[in-house]
Image 1 (cartoon, rainbow, N blue to C red):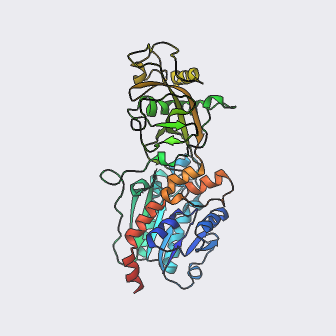
Image 2: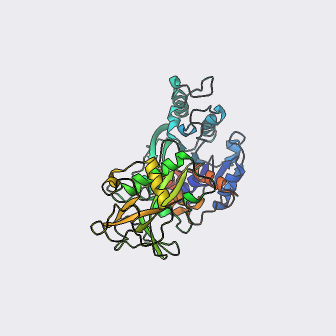
Image 3: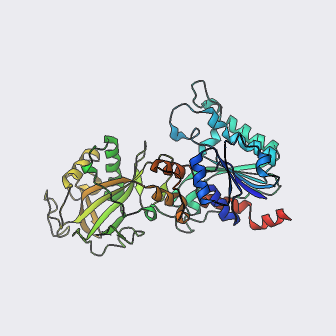
Length: 444
């Protein structure tokens, strides 16, 4: 009995299936040559068909073998709200019907379908090419009904990959359908309150990559981007009760990156050329959002990702809150300040006096307390996350050694990652419904 990945991309779903079953996926199908080349590099024992799912004849493709598992992740972009208020492509929305073609032709024992949550609202498009809100969910109901008429029991839930050990907060709709009379099972979360601790963004950051100052760019950042950076800085560094602080050495190696403020700083060292403190967070360049702390999960990685690392360089003020005049407009610091004036101007322009800052100054001046010792922000750096960091967020510990070299550009790598399935949740879902005991029973 074989396992099939019907819309095989970079290989996240296939990796999850293999983790659950302890064997290779037998057949992977995709029309995208780059995606299939990446899949082939990481799943060399799988048979690959570079073709549209509509051009592949199911009975010929399986070569007479029974199908145990079929995983399908049809294109989700034309369902997602992230596409905004623009016309949708009805052809891409209809790809999900390919599942019924395979269900009817080769009758897989268990079907797994993954898509965005908005897939539940699948309905007809209006004359303008936009979803008809009055008929939302009509096509989805018909799609489910067609599977049920083929003899499948169908259930669906929204699952968060972080609840199963992924460092990303990725919530997707998962549909399970089976025709063998066995109950559909949903895996219990392994991470979260009362369970294993949730993974964090911090473990995905590569601190060896420079984070250039936002004040030294040849082309200034857009006003909205500057606002998002300033707002994130206010929320996650200036006003946070536990901002994420790392101590960087002269080689850019962080000390105890996995620990938040208060556990890695002894006495609040200043920037003396060999060591520096950095208040870090993830900024997001996407409408309506700003970012989040590094001790949280990475938000959903998309095919055109919008995550960037922002790093606020800190230096210690001489003295302490009781021993120095903190109203001095230019307090002496233990190292060269680089863009103190620009940082203050940014905060003043975009945030105004923050509640935390007002307790110390008459105007926002980038004040951060590290173990009771006042530090000032002297510069702000920012860079987009690199593909290997995004892959860590999506694949976690399974990213090590995963080969995306088939994608020749950064954009292509990011697209593969953003379109992939987090293997942690795929493995949990397949393991719950197609365990080793079931395989043995089915074989007999």
